[in-house]
Amino acid sequence: MATMLGNVALTLLTVLLLQLMLAVAWRVSSRLLGLSRRASRHWIISTLLCALSVALVLARGWVPDVLGVVLSSVLAVTAVLAIRRGALAFLKQSAYDGEAILVLVAVGGAGLGCLAWSSPMAAATQVLINSTGMAWVLGRTAWQIYGPLRTEFGDGTAYMLVATFVAGVALFAARAVAGLVPGAPPLTPFPTDSPANIAAAVLMLLLTLSLHGSLVLMVMNRLVRRLRHLSQRDPLTGLFNRAEWTRQLEAHHRWLGRYGDAFGVLMVDIDHFKKINDTMGHAAGDAVLITVAQVLTASSRDVDVIGRLGGEEFGVLLPRADAITMRRTGERLRQLLSDAQTTWREQPIRVTVSVGAALCADPDETPSMLYERADRALYQAKHTGRNRTVLSRLAG
Image 1 (cartoon, rainbow, N blue to C red):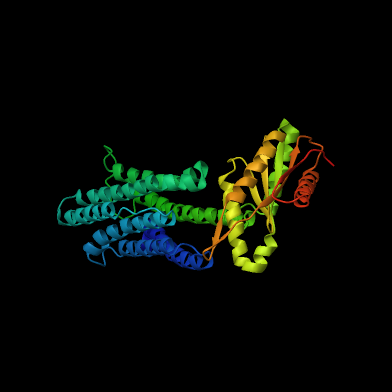
Image 2: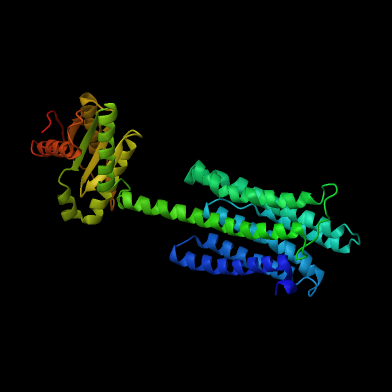
């Protein structure tokens, strides 16, 4: 079999089969993972176009040159453009189709021109133009996706994902300039066996794996972030849930033990919330909870940690606070929530809140003890008239 096909042909056949497997994998993963339909559709199209391009390359000598040479080159560039379009769709960015059309016209036109050019340099020129087109598309893709990747995933992940596209640029750029080096062997098109073609075919196989591996990594990063967000957030208000807020509390307590930075906790509870649910329905109660969450978020510092601890109770963690800051913040939030209004079915709903505050300046006081102390202050605010802030002064 090896003597019939040759090393380059065997490698290209492996690329073809790999592309078909990737098409199936993207189709299955789009259903199981809820992947963006636009992105997965473009990546499936890319694999199929690449497989067809490789099939035409392998069929050179049996099909007309306009198919085996020109169309195969156009399909290969289109496959990479489809990868780019899918990545941009995944990242919710606009595609630049005008530029893509120019690249395809340039590659296709150059291919037809080389077919009509009866010169020993025609084949090498065709390889040069095709490789330049592929390098350009991969480079532009890396440039266009880097910013959105950095915004969503951070510098490290963005560098890692873009590196594969940059490696593809280097591969095709090296193939493009190889024929320009004085004394270098002349470039020959695939699937002719030559040391340069064998190396290029193997590198293209690795590039295929790396490109789609980068896409998989991009998808999995977003999926993990979504799962982490769901595990940390209250689904109604979008605030931290009780478990995550408690973890943040424990982290600040460790910070207190290490650096001595005091912090405070505010327990905010909506007064007579049950009455709203009983008289207006739970949907109206949910609207009130959302309003409270929005006011707390808009009125707090970026460093403050806000969570919904359950029912109508919220927690606000105030880093680097003192007793005066605690009382002022509690009163300010209480007043803002009292002034806020929720409109439910054209009916205004106003609520008041009771606030229990506790300052933690002693590393020996555990987070659970601090939480209980703030809760007792909230209980006192509830049973001394509501709509007020009570600051717990003593531990224990």
